Amino acid sequence: MSGILNSSIGRKFAMALSALFLMIFLLQHFAINILSVFSPDTFNEASHFMGTFWAVQYLLQPVLIFGVIFHFVMGFVLEINNNKARKVSYAKSKGSANSSWMSRNMLLTGLVILAFMVLHFIDFWIPEINVKYIQGDMSGLINPDAADSGFRYYEELHHKFESPLRVGAYVIAFILLSLHLLHGFNSAFQSVGANNKYTKGLKGFSKVYAIGIPLGFIFIALFHHLNH
Amino acid sequence: MNLTLKIWRQKNANDKGKIVDYKVNDVSPDMSFLEMLDVLNQDLIDKGEEPVAFDHDCREGICGSCSMYVNGQAHGPDSMVTVCQLHMRSFNDGDTIYIEPWRATAFPVIKDLIVDRSAFDRIQHAGGFISVNTSGNTQDANAIPIEKENADRAFDAATCIGCGACVASCKNSSAMLFVSAKVSQFALLPQGQVEATDRVLNMVKQMDEEGFGNCTNTGACEVECPKGISLENIARMNREYLKASLKG
Image 1 (cartoon, chains in turn blue, yellow):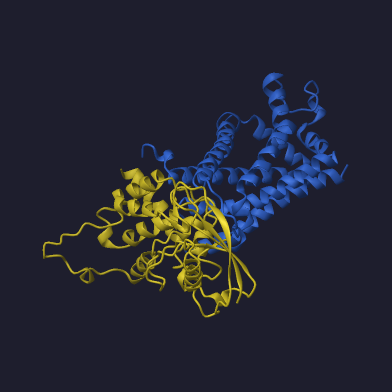
Image 2 (cartoon, each protein chain N blue to C red):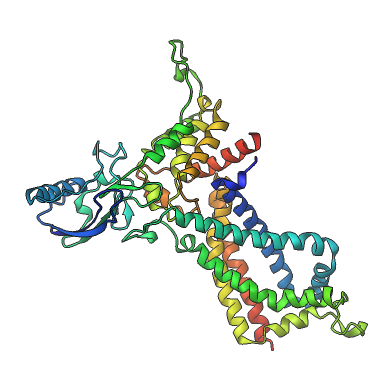
């Protein structure tokens, strides 16, 4: 077992596991965000729970951050190694004849997602950490001194999507995320050795997931933007 | 047919190499691609020039020697054929055809279109075999019952001719389709079980040491493989490797 991360297959496996974990997280993130469209109160309750429950904050959140960093770093490590494997390029190469654009451009789509995550962290995660752990306000209220002021989460989300520039950036990032997932979803299963009678069905489900979830996020952003 | 060929010319392993243009006229559509190159070479010899060096042997698609990247694809535009089985009817009169050697750090160019594929041999030596007692009392392989489905899959994997088109087509120059075919053909049969753990660990280790890239599941190898080796083999190799890593 020692040194498995130094082997090509071990790295593929680790990459795939982190991808599967991030895809589960994405689904959970979407499930909570979509509540903001149907019921602001339920969205507030769910956000407060996720933002204050110790297991989420001190166990799952660090694992998630590690997962995100690991996925990106491992992606770059693999890309560097793969570039070394072909130092002279072909004068003419017809990649489109045998593979999808998505599969050949995971680094490009991944970099856009990375840039989006920086924006997303500045928008939501850093202010949240600031309020909770630097200012020490764990109440989740708009006005911590007034118990009847209501939770701040929905208001913050709604306010963020006022800017058309931000909404535009989010929409572009979600389109790239969809392209990333269109290859990444199945690729992760192939890397962990799952290629069997269920693969065809899984490919169908992967398309639903890879298009449906980013489209859902786009819908949420546009919904809040248009409701101002 | 009259054609313009853009061929990679490189005197030896240390030469920088470059694309050189050639005109070939009166090419019959019924010629094979290699026969068309034979005509070009005869013309070059008649002119006192150095003929284009390329690998070939059986010219019937089973030796895996002819390794050429034709018009941006391994073994050219046709599917499920090696370049020796590619015919000129797959091209049109007036076409410009790029002919390049396989490009991979692990497959250095020896001369013109010939690359050194001994990295594949070393991977095979690392574990692509079964140890059989050959002292005279060897059991008949046909006496061992094997599930039909597994026998068929092992046979499919064993059709890999080691031509290197998978490496050439992969954007990462990964050799995983080749190695997985060799791992699979034994992993699926009872005779391969005894050395299964060492086989996959050693072959993958050798593959990594040779400098091949990592598979990112683009599927290009499967599409370009002249023998139709399936990506299922790579998934099987991944499973075998993880199982062996946990064991060993």
